[in-house]
Length: 289
Image (cartoon, rainbow, N blue to C red):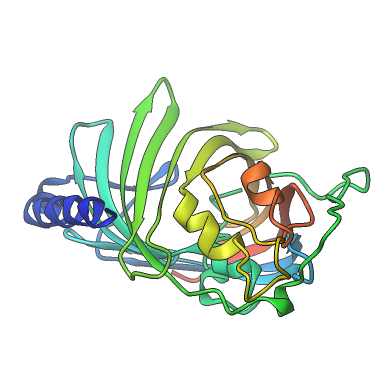
């Protein structure tokens, strides 16, 4: 049944590749960029991403790359490879491929963890008052079978109205690993102040039962009889806050925060100990190109 979205994505991919040359401008975040020019910067500082799984390790953030390149026909943007077409002056449709991020909770040095924290993203550090979920039966990451590395392809629609960027996206697995889909809807607003540049985003994510079951489901081979868990559709809300202030033409300071709220479709799994994921980072960024 999951083959239908894949066919649709491939058809639209062909159309985008045929007409991408008509897209007159490329924008990264709120700033338009020059085509056929590599952009590379590194942020040095400290931060953490929490891990909601029993036995899962927090991800320490020390050195973060921000790398992207846009040509007339395709682009690479921090781990995402795709092509886009301008539907109007304010609306753009893209087809994008990327590694699924769920694997990052199970394997700390997963490649998808490296390029998902660029400075134009993210929202709230982990407060001591937050309470971890206490389940009667707990399963650690080390006790379950290895979760797969999946590659997803999706369609993303971006449109700007009244200085707000609205975004819709739909993704499907093309690697045959989780055979599921997920989608997101969100809005982002940026503004300039005497204290620097701010960006606030809110998103709602939907993840299919197949995707949740692949990563957070538990089989009879992993847990005692009667403790199995089969994943179901999940709805997750996310809030992101980003701040940066240039010090020179190439050097700037930045802080980003992210808060992701998990629903019962995930927390009902004995693998999951917390109902949220928090990410934060502060540091100095230097742009090489």
